[in-house]
Amino acid sequence: MIRGARICYQSTARTPDADERLIRRLMASEPKHNTVFEHAVFRFGIKCPLFVARQWMRHRIASYNERSLRYCIADREYYVPEGDLSQKDAYIEHMEASFDLYEQLIEAGWKRERARGVLGTAVYTEFIWTVNAWSLMNWLQKRLDPGAQWEHGQYAKAILEIFSEIMPVTASAFKESVLKL
Image (cartoon, rainbow, N blue to C red):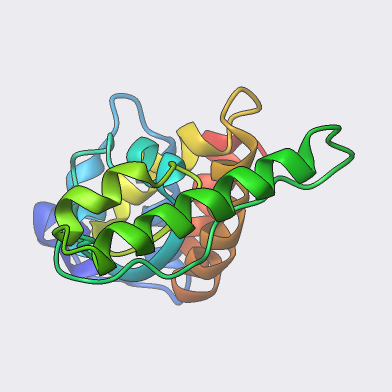
């Protein structure tokens, strides 16, 4: 990624901390110099409830490839919210009943692509998410916002940790300049 930044100026680092200073300056600049951050690419394997995946995939500047319930049998896995929920037993009972019906329909000869219609959005899905660093930071900014859905925010916190391990300088500059952490 630093080569993407340095090519713009046809420059080289003259001091040990020059690259870090350049990244921090580009991250803090207005207008943003985002193209240099588009050269680093991440690929994540994601497993989350369908309702989280649908919000996730609204971020269209990325590539997705999702496990298809048209071709695969759904695993009997679903998200159950934490906390003291007065209707938690009814929720679990409903999810189990939907899986029972799903399996009955398939046994009766229904195609998987039709039978899946009885499953709720709490069912887990899996997908591969390929995203450049700039789009990743855009996603993080939105999904770490206090107004974001709690479940999605938990994935964002985990991905921010991974991002911080893989690109510590860029992640640190992002946290300081954009997230104000």
